[in-house]
Image 1: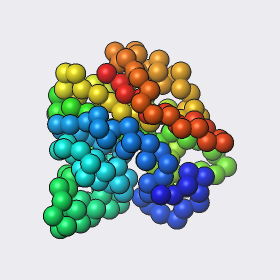
Image 2: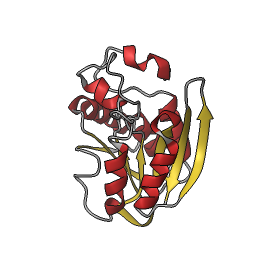
Image 3: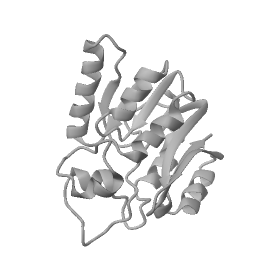
Image 4: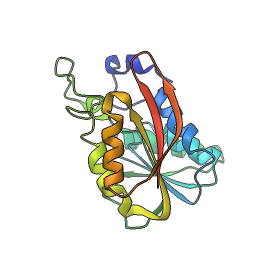
Length: 198
């Protein structure tokens, strides 16, 4: 997995797994079953972990066409090796999906606050940056994810201290979610938490 600090310098159009990906997978494995959606799948690494290590029927989505292609190749490789793969859908957040479609939704969102000096106009910037506050993608996700959750479903959301932990919790509560912290790791520059929202 790629070190978080190195991600901005990577010359790639698809987000590759890093510490945050590992935390999201760790939080969801053992806690998901039924039909599971991973939003913003990037390379499809988390979706692969869920397909291999749970009994869930996994769907992965991303806005980035390059990510969808890479995730679909990963899923095809799994199937070619005789394992269960996962489906890949291109779309924005939960827009492509019907109401009450999923038992769980996992999301490692673009959460870095915008750095205008380092800004790039490419897919990697889309994968990493969450606008001025870091919550430009998280807020609409929290406003809409409840629609696709089955009753009693759970959202696994990765949150960085750089993004404003309390502000994310307030938005989740405004949308009717309670929360538990499933896993948390501290690094020199941030603390990452995966919340279970119900």
